[in-house]
Structures are given as C-alpha cells and as structure tokens.
Image (spheres, rainbow, N blue to C red):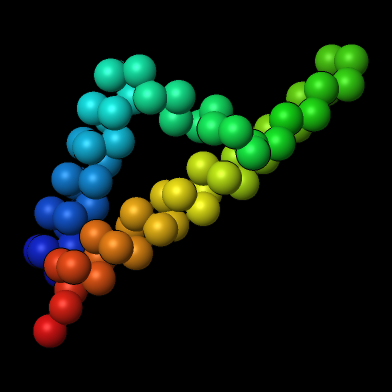
Length: 65
C-alpha cells in the first residue's frame, strides 16, 4: 500500500510539473468540445487515453513481482 501511495503522489507531482511547464494538458487534439449558446460540453477522450496509458506503465513498472 505504501508503494502505491508513493507512485500516485509522484504521478500527481509529475503532471503538475508538466502543466507548469506549459503542456496543454486537458486540451489535447482529439478532445471533444461542443459549444451551443450558453451550454458547453467538454469530453477529454484523448487526455483520458493518455493518462490511462501512463498510469498503466507506471503501475506495471512499480508493482511487478
């Protein structure tokens, strides 16, 4: 459990650093944004896929037995 918490903390810190450096996190090409009048729907599909791949790689690396 301790290793998992460390990995999650490091991942959050890494994402924070990338955002501070100017990575357009959450606004990647392929994310869906629909604007109609005063209604906006934002669905970050590509961002979700990228996060899923990164977390899978990190957790596979650290939780390998």
